[in-house]
Length: 165
Image 1 (cartoon, helix red, strand yellow):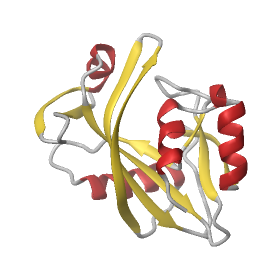
Image 2 (spheres, rainbow, N blue to C red):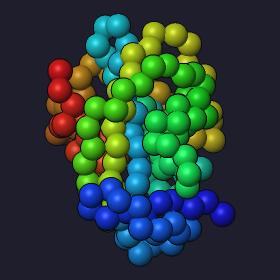
Image 3 (cartoon, rainbow, N blue to C red):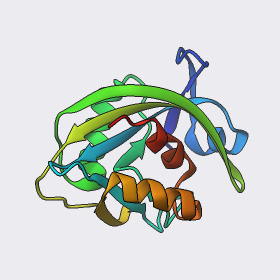
Image 4 (cartoon, rainbow, N blue to C red):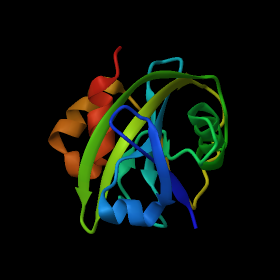
């Protein structure tokens, strides 16, 4: 079983609970998102694997996940970057936000910590996590998000609006 950290709206930990139950009941929990840029300023985005329990086949940020109990958010960001995309790089926490999205039978309600990084090396995605990936031009991506929002995860749509140039 996988557990997530329940938090209040100030990101104060108030407990832990099984991940799937938290998403069924729509409880606020701690999450992380990673956005990787290359030297050309393009954003690494991934298409979520068909093995995911929600939002499968949708395009999203470089990595999104949850820290484990007693794991710092930064360590979790590095761990998941390696597990999902097969590399690691320097990451800096940039901002956080709360979002809520109905995903059919599940509800995402997350206090999301956003990390930014730069990387130009080899990418070796885990096929259990990632169906596809690409480097996207930010302005083209914003246009596509506006015109084809159904192709993207709801948190990514909100997150990309918050990223400063």
